[in-house]
Image (cartoon, rainbow, N blue to C red; front, top):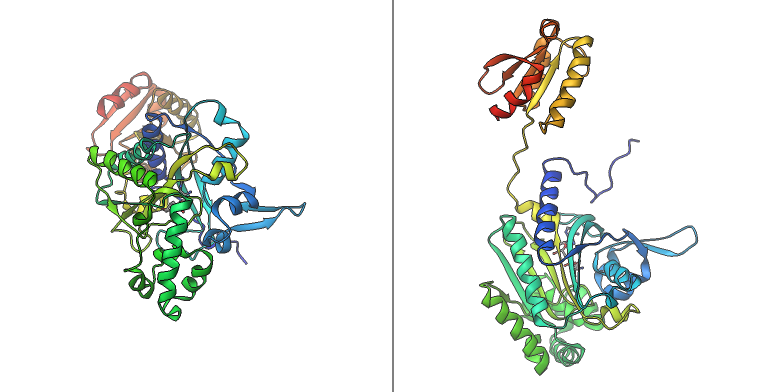
Amino acid sequence: MSITRIKGFADMFSPESTLFTRMENCARETFYACGFEELRTPILEFSNLFRRSIGEETDVVQKEMYTFPDSKGRSMTLRPEATAGVMRAFIEAGLANQKPVTRLFTTGPMFRHERPQKGRMRQFHQINCECLGSHSPLADADLICMLMRFLGRLGLKKLELQINSLGCPECRKNFKAALVAYLRGLSVTDLCADCTRRLETNPLRVLDCKQPGCRELTDKAPHLIDFLCGDCRAHFDMVLGLLSSQDIEYVLNHRLVRGLDYYCRTTFEVVSGDIGSQSAVAGGGRYDGLVKSLGGPDVPGVGFACGMERLALLLPEVSENRPDFFLVSMDDACRGAGFGLVQKLRAAGLTGEMNFVTGGFKGLMRQAGKSGARYCLILGPDELARGEVTAKNLDSSEQKALSFASVTEHIKQGL
Ligand code: HAM
């Protein structure tokens, strides 16, 4: 039986791989300008890190993690998201003592055993940012402004920023009680099986169930922002005010409770109407108790992650960069001299390749055309004897004999 790739895991060829590089470059440029530094954390971590940070009752921990024992029987997990690993690294490196605010971004593959569909993979990639050390609403708004600037620079328009506040544990306790009372007032059989279970384990998640029946039932459910304490309400109002001051439009979404347990206060998602049901291209929020709950100091934080596969669905196709030349060498002697010329052209900043084996002239010219190069440099025994190449412009078909020394200049001028 032949070996194939695993369902939900993709090989990524160009142009998608080129799109990913472009996204990462744009992210680096945008985030560096805001004081972020890049951190790369391991893909494999002890399972407890995710259980404790994401939460035992979440779908991610309950159903979606790739977890297995190592040779010593310790439980290991392929990271389903980046935040937990970044927190562990932040604590282990003692970064809390180094500066008041630490800004870290990371990119790379994440793993969730979900049902694959458009925009949902089992191995997917995130661009992830965390800002640690500040309770201020300025930190939330600054981060959201940066996210929207990044998406704008990628050329993405028609995106909607949705925002909510989950308040502090005290606000949430009061809200949960009101929500559970409301849901129990409904006939429980009206909720889907998942929500009937969530009602006991994680009632807030009933609000973001996608089943039409559950959505209808929760349309009239209490709203979390009506249960915010004075401090949380003031924090949220300030975040909203700062966003408005920067002309960032948002929509309040009372269902935005997020699928990971560490959030408090601000939560947000950026959604697109153009990519089907998996519409969130980015999601994040504040997580003030997380570092402490993992054994670190009491450091607040706010962050987000973008799904790169989903962003790629929205980006315009990139036109592949055309190489500058293709060198056609007709025999072994020409190939030796051609090899030297190709190295010289590349050292001068030009891009291109050559044929490594002998072939018929027509076939080699076809190969040059297929490469997309602008110039074909023909090097046969006659040219070699004269110390020249014939440079053919593949767009205009004009050709000219050139000394080896003048090829670089000729191509550069023609580009
Ligand atoms: P999340 O909402 O679980 O948040 O994921 C963030 C983004 O990753 C989603 O909006 C989506 O674009 C993408 N994503 C998630 N699952 C998949 C999948 N199976 N296939 C393709 N794309 C996917 C987090 O992961 C948080 N750690 C974000 C965060 C950082 N919060 C604070 N800091």
